[in-house]
Image: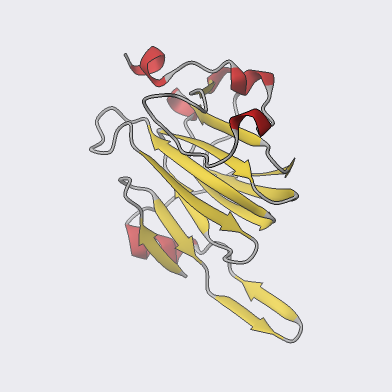
Length: 181
């Protein structure tokens, strides 16, 4: 696996080594020891999640707070998404900055999203199957979010806003300034 730094502190793009032949392909989606050697980060993941979304579904920008803040490794099993993260750590040199990347079932790249980041994605294919590997268990009382179209984060979803498919919750998230002043 190849691990690349992103413009955001502690956030990494993981490019697994893919073995293809006449039968299909094989890849190792995560190797804890290799990741630790490449980054100096040694995480123990405790929960895997999967979502299925149709074209135009935007899920985000979500995070968990306090003791239940989650580090995640996210990837697309099927389809194509625009994956976006925002650094919400006030002490970070990249606080308030965002990064986006295309994740799909062709490049098979993954994104390591550290604690203190908001995360979201937009399905660009007819359907996507999206997987999350988390280092903390989900706690409903700790969930939080920032509105997807926040003017300060200025995320370019590169998609017509009137065609987005959003949950009611994602339409009512607070702004970055309402959360961080």
